Each structure stands twice: as structure tokens, then as C-alpha cells.
Image 1 (cartoon, helix red, strand yellow):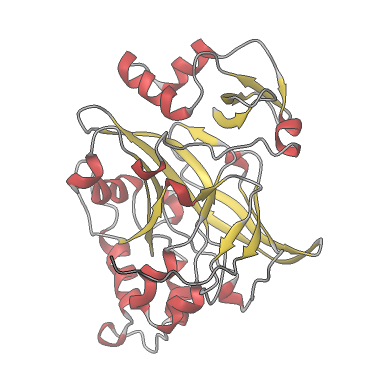
Image 2 (cartoon, rainbow, N blue to C red):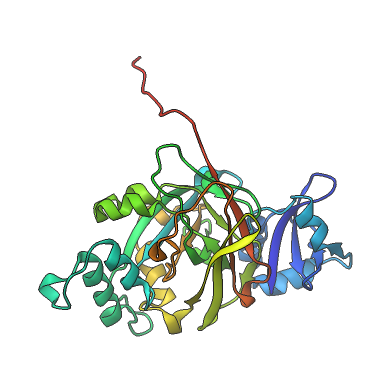
Amino acid sequence: MRLIQFMTSGHQRAVGLVASATEIKPLNDVSSVYQLAKAAIAKQASLTDLVNQLVADETLSYDAIVNEGRLLAPFDHPDPAHLYVTGTGLTHLGSADTRANMHAATSKKDAELTDSMKMFKMGVEGGKPADGELGVQPEWFYKGDGSIVVAPGQALTSPAFALDGGEEPEIAGFYVNDDKGQPWRIGFAIGNEFSDHVTERQNYLYLAHSKLRPCAVGPELLIGELPKDIRGYSRIVRNGQVLWEKPFLSGEDNMSHTIANLEGHHFKYGVFCRPGDAHLHFFGTATLSFGDGIETQEGDIFEIAAPEFGRPLQNPLRKASDPLVKVKSL
């Protein structure tokens, strides 16, 4: 089951069930997935059951929603400041090579491995603990709050001070905390985590700086468990032609960590269990055009897709020219 969020032709927010590649069935009585999730928690019902209860007989054109720019991100919070956007890296079995090349790995010996390779090795050895146990910690980063999430089709804006704006095709998980602070997983979507890899390459301690950028997710939210083996593609289109394309793999069969381990290490912190808050968490990637020497340009279109997630996620690149903010004294 997959859901979208969109604006109706009457300029009202709505949630829709993806009935087919071209048809959407709206849900009655809810205007957001956040509202839907809170209702499911209150009713002690599964999201699938609640969607089946609320789905309307009406059918809408998916193409019209897309072509008229009415798609929204598949999940958000009524107050963007209460949506945490975070992620984990070095979680996929192919992810270490690109990172190691960026950070100049020179040897297979443990004593001479880069910190990135050491972190990756730790994940391979301890990232899939037994059920109910917490394994090794992953790399973790903060991207921003809900205000940085752009809708499918909208521009990913690279700030004026950025040295690069590159795609990162990833799976993202979505969560909401109930009134007691218990986190509940809503589902998953394809995402473009979008980072500044030139800044990160200068020094791995600049990772935090490189991640403070916008991101995109969607268009569709997959309800239920994440498939174990996900095979998709990531491409960059320039002037109507495919400039670069590469397959990407995700799902636990292609990861060095379980989803449960990544979730456990995120939600072990009390600050992330505040009642009513929501979370968008990226699970990492192994595929980057930057690793193949691609330099993105304004107007390039990022396209990321996997069959399990329905329609591709497409976003053009825009470069901002805003001046740096100067602090004033009171």
C-alpha cells in the first residue's frame, strides 16, 4: 500500500491511496498522513486498516496532480520545527568504497584504515544484532527540520556558499511519537538526501556542514515493512539527456545494519521521543555520481526510483545567490 499527500484542485490538503500508476483514491476525514497516523494510534488500528476504512470511491488523475504541481512530500508535521530530519551513513555494503576514496584510504591494515573504513568495518561486524538487542552505533548526522524538505518536482537549492550539490539516493523512514513519547514507524519513501561532497572531501570532520542542505522525499509513502532487497536507479538528466546513471541497492540484504538497529540508536535519545514530534530519517546510500567525477550544474534534474516506491522522485538543481547572513548586535 502506498500513499501520497497532495493539494486538491480546490486548494485543500489531502491524502490519497495510490490505486494504480495513473489513479489516486482520496481518503475521507484526514488531510495529512500525520493526522492519519495519530488517528491510527488513538484507535489502536493499523494504518492499512484505517486507510481501507477511509478510502473514497472517487478516483482522481495522478497525472493531473503531478502535471499541475500539486504533489506534496508524502509526510510532514503541522509545525515544521517539530519534524527532525536526520540520517545515518556507512550503512550499505557498497558505501565504504566511495567514502574511502573521498577520504584517501591507503591500506587494508586496521591501523591504517581511514576512520570511515573503520566505522564501516564495525557495522559489518556488529550492525545486525539479534532481535531485541542493540548492535554497534552507526554514523549519524542532523540535516535540519521540516522546513528543508522539498516536494517532488520542486527545486533542491544549493546555498551560495556551497562547493557542490550532489544527489544521494536513499530510503527514508517516517515516524511519529504518541502522547507518551513512544515512536511509531509510519512507512518508507525513496529520497534524495542531497549533500555537499566537495566540502566533506576536504575533511571528514566537515560532514556535519556538508549535510545542512535541503532534501526531497517521495512522491509515495510505502506502508508496512521495508523489502529486504531493493534495486533501483539514480540518474542525472542534463538538457534532456541522461548525463549519468547507476543502479543502487538498498534493503537489509544490501546493508551492514538492520533497520531496527538504526532506529534503536536514533530513538535511544530522549530528545527524539518528545510527544507529538515526528522524524524523517535517511538510512544511507552506496551510490553517488560524485564518486564517478560528475560535477552537477544548475538545471540538472535528479531522478531516483525503485519499483517498490511507485513513481520516480524528480527534482531540479538550483543554485542560490543569497549573501551570507551577518549577525547584528543589540
